[in-house]
Length: 289
Image 1 (cartoon, rainbow, N blue to C red):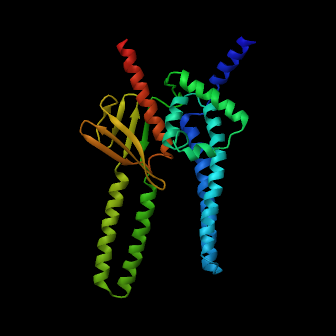
Image 2 (tube, rainbow, N blue to C red; image 1 turned 45 degrees about the vertical axis):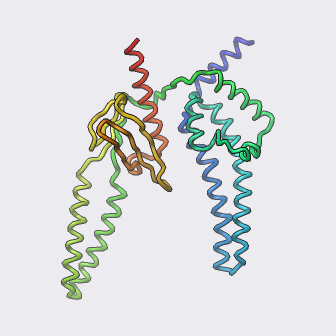
């Protein structure tokens, strides 16, 4: 029976397909997003009614208090459920722990947060086994074979083209109106502005912007290729709502690229950076043996 249990444990490990980054992405969806929605409803609804129905402003304060309490209770329940699920279904639990700390899903260090987490007996026992795995198993790299040897990220020009085209149409309408009304000085200014925008639209369209990531290193349309051995501090940074950039240090200085138009989610780029660097380091160790 013991042999069968060991075999079953290894079999379960083999068929775990959730990556650490996918688990973090799910955490954002089932923890961070609902909490934001709760706050928007609890604070936004009283604020709207204050303006529409002339309710007392105290209702806004009440909504804030209610939103804080409700979101805290939800967090206390959801964070435990996610934590047990994630560390059960992800192979690379050490990488998951690093990412979970970064996203404040684990190891926040807040006494109040730890004391208000809602655990049942089964979850607590399960988490104790996970903690044993984390403390007794050495951190080791678990490759994601879905990721190819090289990934080329090409900037999508859709957003900038839509904005530029809309602005250009607006200027052309203004130009047509100025000509009809014989406001020739205004027409010349609008025509010049439209011509400049059209020129930059064309130059932006024909210029290819890209990021090449592979097991050897990184290169972009502006920066030559550098190996992982020459690169330091590669990071994906959160700048604001839905806005992220990618930075890394190379022998000539720092490179900073906004990734909004390059990739669907910042988690995807974080995983690519991690996997390619680890493959490089594994190869370097193999070459030295």
